[in-house]
Length: 130
Image (cartoon, rainbow, N blue to C red; front, side, top):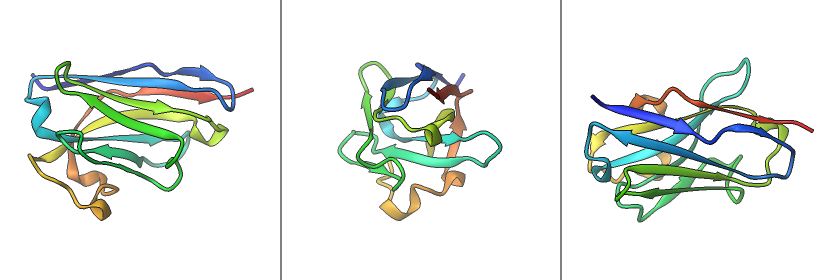
C-alpha cells in the first residue's frame, strides 16, 4: 500500500523554524522525485519545493526560496522540509507528493504543475502567529 505520512507541523512565531517530515512506504522512494505543496486557509493548493529522486537538484517557488530547504534521505524513505524565517503567510497545511513519472528529471518550469503528482499525504498543519 502506497502511503505518505507528514509530521512536524505546529504553532510557531514569526521568524522561527520548523522541520517537516514525510515518511514514505509502498513504493521505491529513491526512484521518484518528490514535492512539497501547501494550502493556506481559504485558498488553493500551491507548490512550494521539489527534489530529484537522487537529491541532486532542488527547486523552490519564489515565495519560499532562500527560507525553505527541501532534502531527502533515501535510506530512510524520508523527505524533509526545513522552514526558516517563518512568516504569517506561511500558515497552511503542508503536503508531500510523489511525481507521477518514474525516474524522471523534471524540468524546472513544470514543478509547479500539481497535476504531475499522483500520490499525496494527509498533510501537517503549520500555523505562524505571534
